[in-house]
Image (cartoon, rainbow, N blue to C red; front, side):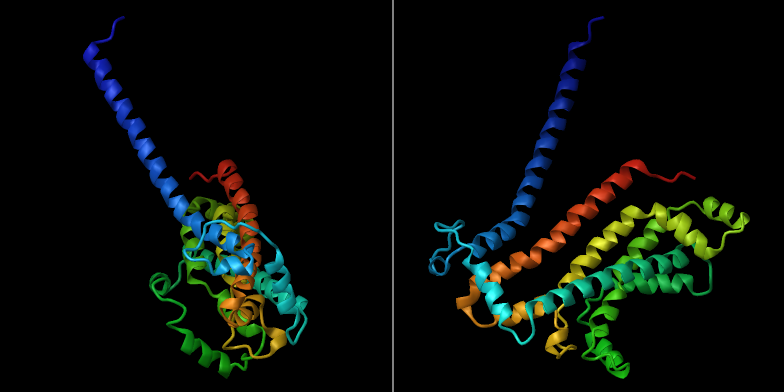
Length: 291
């Protein structure tokens, strides 16, 4: 059977437009990726630049004599603080783990109630959560400080952990994900005698791993960068980002130390993101709920 030449030409034009659109999207994503990678590249390059190359103008995108002296100086500067360097690392790890775990637990439980439990004021609370997404944390910082002062949390580790546990973004993300769970599954569990707590932790949450891992990524990144310099004054309670900011405040002569410290702070969130992302992709590929 011979096809009509006009049909073949139209098909070729559609294929050409499809290939052209794919190439345009690829070029756009490549350009966007370069803009995202550029700051990371500059941070890594500046972290291995010697001091004499820091003041070259115009700045170079590479280094002629790479060195790891900036990392050694970073450790030396942080080791000269009032408390051991290991204490700052422990504080950062402790705050990050507590915030990430508690945020995942409380956001998942609250999201289940808002998504699958009918009670008076449900719509109002959901509207407040959506409205809270529009506000920056700096807007409510003064109110948070007053509440923490009334609860005697100032200059305590709880001042770094508890405010970060309440995340409107994590709650909204989990609620939207749980809305897709079929009500028939929950009703069947209720018929079998399961309580709301059992339904939440044994039926709903195990099927929310992509959303849970996504929330954990955001929680880990935010918690790792917590400074809390205005609510914690005791040196033994400060986190690693706070101390690094203090070291970087010495002036331009410590720009290499600042960049090396930025690379050190950059590594844990990236590793956690890589591990969590693999779990998200695997779960999305092998799970699903159909009503």
